[in-house]
Amino acid sequence: QLQLVQSGGGLGQPGESLRLSCAASGGTLTNYAVGWFRRPPGKDLEAVACISSSGATRMYVTSAKGRYTVSRDTAKNTVFLQMDSLKFEDAGRYLCAAGPVCGDNNYWGQGTQVTVSS
Image (cartoon, helix red, strand yellow):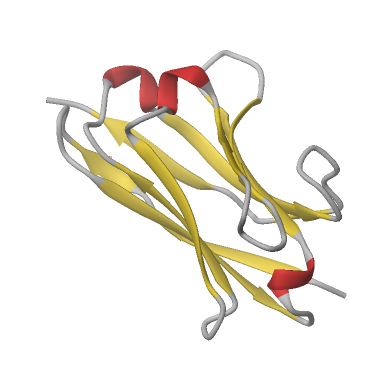
């Protein structure tokens, strides 16, 4: 069974960058679309980015366009979320999820916290 382990995140200042990782074991991550989700404090979970299994399609929530980049490292069986030009509203708990297509999430990472503070 596919297992996802997240790393990265932490504390960043506005304008800085953070990178989140979602590493897979028990399966090949290129067989799955991988989405990134955020749960801001006191708010619902929202999708922020997704990369298709082939990597040909990448989708972003409007607030992340131009600042976030989702990518794959097939050799490492890992998907990354690069977050640039951080804003306060980027803060929250971030989770990755894998499934057959974006929006169909069968496997979830454990989550990692992103804090944005000056």
